[in-house]
Amino acid sequence: MNKINNFYIKNISLLILLLGISTLEAQTNDVKFSTTIFTHTTTMDNLDGSTTILDHPHLNGHPERMVFVQATGKKAEDAFLGVLYDGLHWRIFYQNQEDISEGVSFSVMSKSRKRFKLNHITTTDNTKENITVLSSNRFLYEMGYLLSPTLGEYNNHPLAINYNGKTNSYEIVNSDGEELPIGANFHIYYFDYFIPYPYPKDLKRTALFTPSSLHKNEIKNNLFYINKKHFLEDQIPEHIFVTPHYSTRKEIHDPHPVAVKQIGEEWVLFHPNGAEFDEKYSYTFYIVFKEE
Image (cartoon, rainbow, N blue to C red; front, side):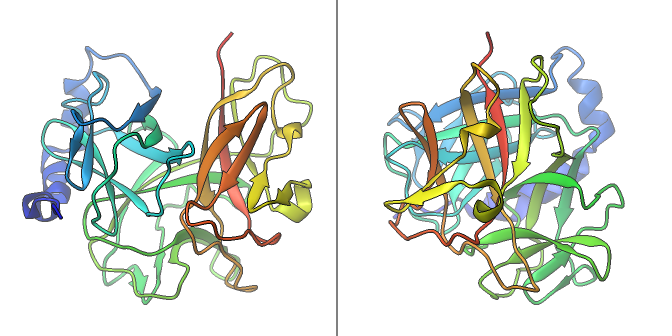
């Protein structure tokens, strides 16, 4: 089994920090973009052992980008995901360090490091056992969020985000209770998800924090059907990104890797390992609709 080169583990966080965000943004003035979204499917050409290379002009040579990935399609595998930058390309890897198979698809979203994004690294000051506290005061309870682990340290455990009402702070949680490693790195994108229904016709993207019991999403045959009420009229999603939510008070969380796929006009969540869904599991969905 091929492993990710130790160079990536030791140097990716240092590389990004040394370059500096201001310098990096100055270098990208010739590329005018804030968000790039596309589907990546693994092939023999882009697979490199336990990673797959994202070859895209908006990502290549841009370590300052914040990259979010979501397993999608029927060939999704039972693995927690992460992303890393190798000095030229961004790559997707499996936290269990297993090889990625050919024909596996991922939704990929790349964003600039500007407003509403945060890079978080676990330290001895902000992390205790399985919880790390996000220091940014920009988070509000009414916000949605996407979480993407980047390679600082491997963390082959289910991740979720929790709002701690006692401390008025957000936390990243290893929801299985296992200790978070010091030096783990995360990209976080946060946004207002309270958008009135029916949605404005010119709205292209939105996100919903959707416990099944609250929004009447149907669970059957180990599939979590996303209520189409969340979709824009006469539009269907092109990509859906998912981040599990964790409740320390109720100890409710999804402990499995989650993938998405389309069945006709329906979109569903599923566990590649075939595990059932609990109706109390909850998630943040970031829904990207097809352009007209």
